[in-house]
Image 1: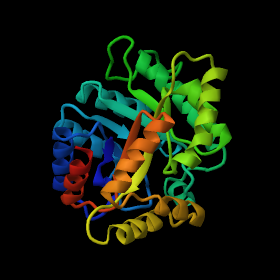
Image 2: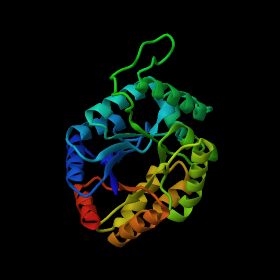
Image 3: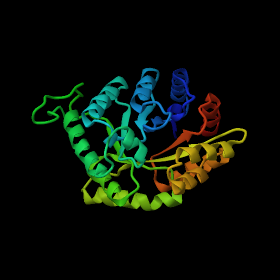
Image 4: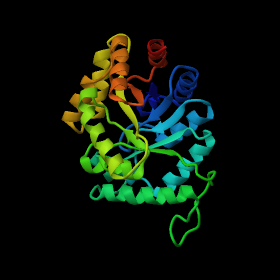
Length: 285
């Protein structure tokens, strides 16, 4: 099980991020994950992960997801290579196109055609990581990575067109918060994309849900998630109903997503208090 850094909470301090990362690294968790928003009170995700990289040595560090059309592909490639080096190869770059119009307005980025934009960005990023020129008219973009090395890349997607990119461009799939039953159909499309692109082995698959533990856990969790997804009532309802708000629910989710074939379950905190991580560690063991 991986766990989210509380970097999406406006009341979380830098010291909170460092303490959370250190405890997660010393605990039973496999990764630390951050989300990307622009018009929200979250920290910038790659900077938050850089802070986590400095105080951890074991857990993977992941974006889940970085909204690539809102960023420069060359900068993403450079930052990702830097994080890969700083962390000793522990960085996973989860990418998606985004769907909140205010994030695009704030970055003066057109929403239309964002899927094609992301594909072009990924083509450039893979060239950068291989040591090739970013463009015909530019030189290589550092830092240089050892031959054959690059960050792991996962794609987050909901639409059929976006899911079809998984097999072509990435190492696997990071899901948006969904129940195991709802997620099963998406996994079939991921598998089909893998086959269509003649990929060997299996894609890495990561499930993501929210958690809230302790007094008034369910109410607090549903309130937080409802606010986070307030731009889409259907998504807000689905995600808020899926908040894991008891030790029993967490254990059941671990089993259910495992039975579905997911390689990892990452739970995102609805509360940035460090006792949430302590309570979760007690459950995971």
